[in-house]
Amino acid sequence: MALIEKPTEKINEKIQPKYKVIPKYGVYTEDQKIKLQVALPGVKKDAITMKAMQDYFTLRAPRDEVEYALDLDFGYEIEPEKTQSEYYEGLLTVEFKLYNPLEHAYEVKIE
Image (tube, rainbow, N blue to C red; front, side, top):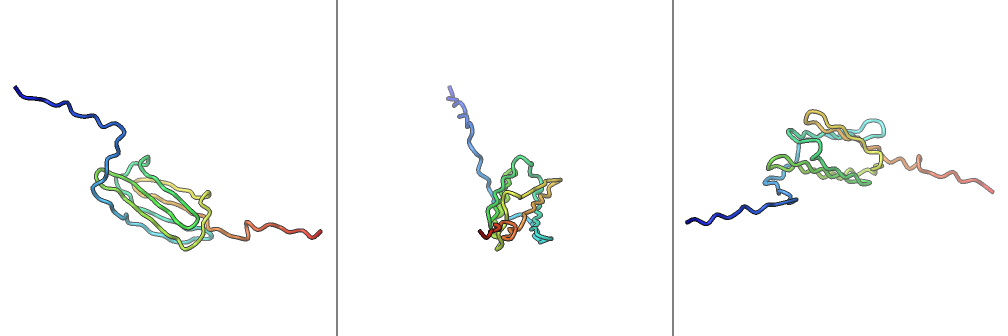
């Protein structure tokens, strides 16, 4: 008689990717914006996570046994709350608005 073990169920356990890969990307400036284009072939839109900070950006995008990971230090201040992104056919486009201190200056009145 053979002993048969019931497979243990793994609920809500995150599968760790086998490989971490830096995706192909391009960055350029246009007007008062930084534009980033990242190639993420085969990645589902819902799997992409991004974080934008004042001068730093992180991206994680898992696919099968691969996790695309990108960390960028801009060297410029951006307005993270005004970041916009679009994902279409494996190409992620992210647009960051550069921080302009004059837009946030307060008018001082003489009394």
